[in-house]
Amino acid sequence: MSFPFLPVERALAQLGGSLKTARRRRNIKTELMAQRLGVSRKTLNRLEKGEAGVSIGTLATAIYALDPEKLTAFSTLFATDAIGQRVADRALPQRIRRMPKL
Image (cartoon, rainbow, N blue to C red; front, side, top):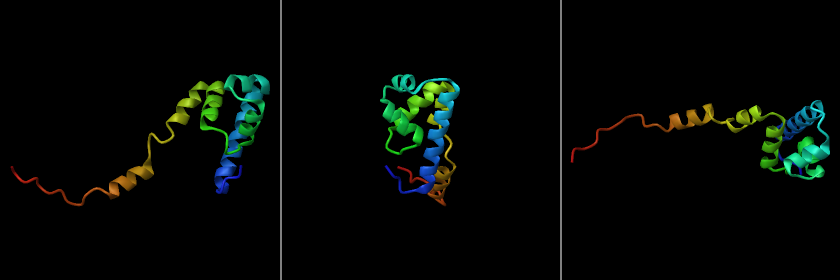
């Protein structure tokens, strides 16, 4: 599966390669890793190549299987969102009017 944005393809390929390297450093064979993730060896291979069609659940499970602490970093990627905060701040009213008394 090809993704329309080259930077995304590159990032996925780098992430997949990093996952593969981490698995190999731990001496985990592909059969065992696929079993831990609950996927086929073919799906694991696709994940390690950085293919965009692999589910985010498989990615998260792989991160957890290799380093549970990194899953927290993965799940909080947008906990602080500077761009979203700037957009929200621009939408704030310039003036605040008093509420009429009832």
